[in-house]
Figure 1 (cartoon, one colour):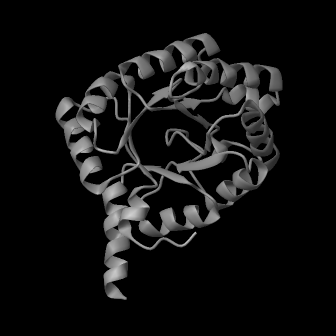
Figure 2: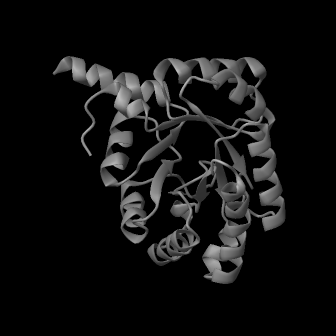
Figure 3: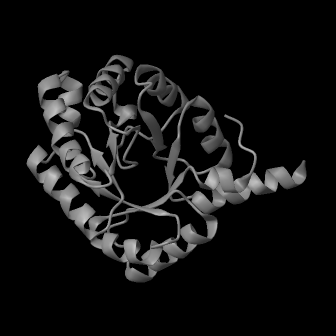
Length: 231
């Protein structure tokens, strides 16, 4: 995919702040930036969903929250309750962390139950809420990535997402995004984790990412504009 403008790039970015120490002023700033740059969404913790949704109303930028974050180790019921609370507070999108132990063990039954619990809540809504499933691709082998993506695609999720950005194994890579896109062509791919530069973002989009999750959103978009200005 060849991007023609910084606005087009911004429309593929989730402007993200998942720091537990974030304060109201930080969220207000995040949302002002998101509306100004016309980012696809802001991604914040449950603590701030209601405020973000209020601030972004009629801006064109969506509100995303996280469930099971950052470990993905709580029960499917807890994740579904988290997702429901996010949605009731105003979330348009839910980024859930999949059960990593189930992925590592190749436990399809447990992983499917985990994803479907949240999927059910998202699909009950009118309109349906977008669901992104985080698989922590950097912690997985190629075979494990393929397994997780196939289960996610079969469950009908909207996005498969590389990383929380919190795992010691690392974040998004173009190689993993390409594999995820090839394995699950009916799903969109969100790349997240360690994305700091314009060059990284463009490489991930070229590999097949439809969405980029990053806290360096402005730096990335401004870098794209600066490169265009030099041409």
